Length: 233
Image 1 (tube, one colour):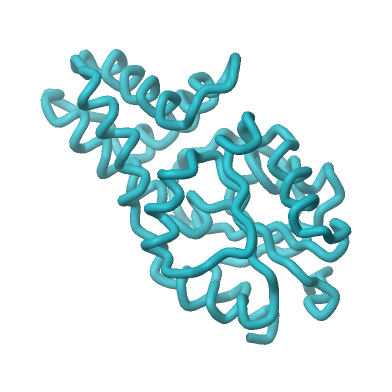
Image 2 (image 1 turned 90 degrees about the vertical axis):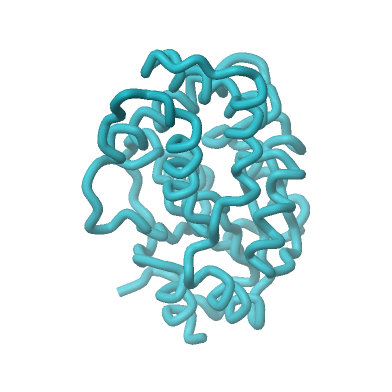
């Protein structure tokens, strides 16, 4: 049984990529383009797990825009598979984020949830890249907090502090919803948020594109439609 009283909740905060946007499909398509000259490539599970290692490495150190992070990730993949990745190709890999598709249920579920709750985004992305994703989702969010705005990447706490300040709500009134245990459910739980794990990878092989982590959500659902139904919508 859910530990969450949805009648008490006033706002839902969402990770975007992996939760609302099908980032693993987007990553794999972008890698198909990037690594096309390679004579052979590993299976998709291996590519996603490599992304889950390369991305945090590229985000370490002083803050840089996510475009620059992904350009470095592209070059890491090039080095791993002996493919020369030039600046134009690295930039195209980074820009592809804005073209990644939403999950089929995201828009309908978000619109249903917006009929009762305020909706906010907390995402490790640049503003302009998220604008492309927002257009594909077709939903207006009450607040959008990006890595570019706070100058750090989750699992650091800055996104969560900033969204609470903007919503002007106690964390007890906010429900954080995300796919990544590493980036979201773990740190949000430590900060006292109640959390919904949108487990988009349920039943899939491999570890996916996020680093492994342990965390205990208050509710687990397989998709956003299930979240809306849990809320009685």
